Image (cartoon, rainbow, N blue to C red; front, side, top):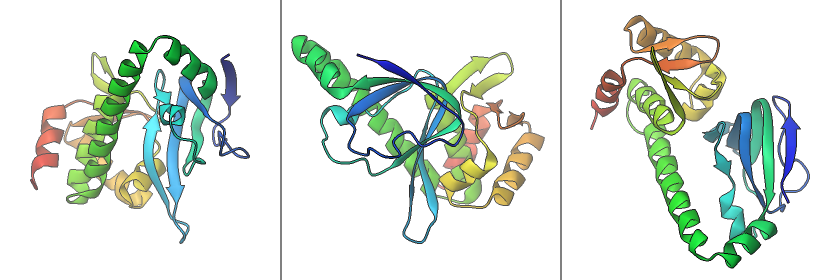
Length: 203
């Protein structure tokens, strides 16, 4: 039923078949979910990292995919055909409730993250976005919570609608203040309470 696929960094997941109905699990690497405006500006809607399940809405929706799914690091995905998953769920109807609860939780995370990316000053939006990503993808460690994603500054800029230079300047300020640590596209949250305070400053 399931099949594994390897996607080098930058590879689109569904380049020729936007109607393919399947979900997938990110085994390693990471996936960027984005859309490009008519003017050519890219907006990053979300990120998926190891252990994330992506595309469960395809179990219910037969419409073509309207977003681009692209590997933002060398990635291994486990593809799960929708028809086979539906057959398993129909055989055990109680499992549909677990799927519904999981999708509701993910929808809530996505809406909060989109809200964080759009409202407030750039400093507030950056702080809220980092905290939100840590909540969804964070891995606790001795030095803080590491975002379990490779996160280039260009990608953060696409999430917030600003340039890489603006992102660099703000991240450097956060790092100098001891709020985060950065290491080659990896970000560790060292003081989440302080970032929460910055994010809430305009509320």
